[in-house]
Length: 347
Ligand SMILES: Cc1cc2nc3c(=O)[nH]c(=O)nc-3n(C[C@H](O)[C@H](O)[C@H](O)COP(=O)(O)O)c2cc1C
Image (cartoon, rainbow, N blue to C red):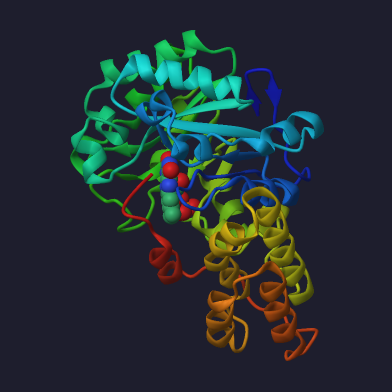
């Protein structure tokens, strides 16, 4: 898949190209790096409001830390796609320039967020009701930066106004280099099932690459999504949270691998955020790696009580020792589990 100057290839020839969806509160740079190392060919940064960037707050600084982008630049293992949203086209273009300055290899514009407060302000998926404005937002951003601009959206506002085919045409005309499509309408939020048929239709009419998104819970689902839609890449969101091995085309990982990954994540977060904040921010994430294994509720409690990096590692090691070493758990996310991970209807 060609994205401006970048050629994205699958990790192995028989695999689809897999990318990490932007996820607020999840996609910090350590987690992105972990997914990239395992095989995600592009990793999404959680969305950032164009005004937050313009204000230059501490929060903005934290969100704009694209430390991993430099690693991708040097190693070529992945691309960092920083995502912007907002209702001020000038600020979106300026924010995209800031992304570029900070090393993002791709700028992604969010036209998919369905959180009511965001829609009310004319941001996110609100653009699906005004395609001239959507066109202008993409056009101005494309003109402002050198890096490829992509968009992420849903299939339409509601079942009666599905307009993804028109959206594809407009974003192409405006100069976007790819489109990621979450196969749900805005009013659906996370309900029902993602409609892969619309992704397939969009793929048929599109002359830019289509990234299919929605309800890929396992690697097998990623293969099905690609076969069903013909999309050039599969974008994985919730399933990656507990199972970044999905990017390696794997069903799961051994207990030892999971422990090692969890320890590595704690270590990198400590290095990145300082021990205390690193531990606090990683704790919630870690239990997801051990879903499906025995005594995880006890483990979760102990993880949540750990306050130091060494304490957290000790909890993981002790718990692992109490389990049979050859244990394998099914890491496939069930639809119920995925629904529980859903986040306020974003995307
Ligand atoms: C916790 C969480 C945070 C999300 N944050 C964003 C975001 O910042 N930007 C965005 O475009 N989509 C966001 N989404 C939507 C996902 O990128 C994705 O489109 C959606 O989860 C469907 O894909 P999935 O079925 O693979 O999870 C978020 C989803 C979740 C679960």
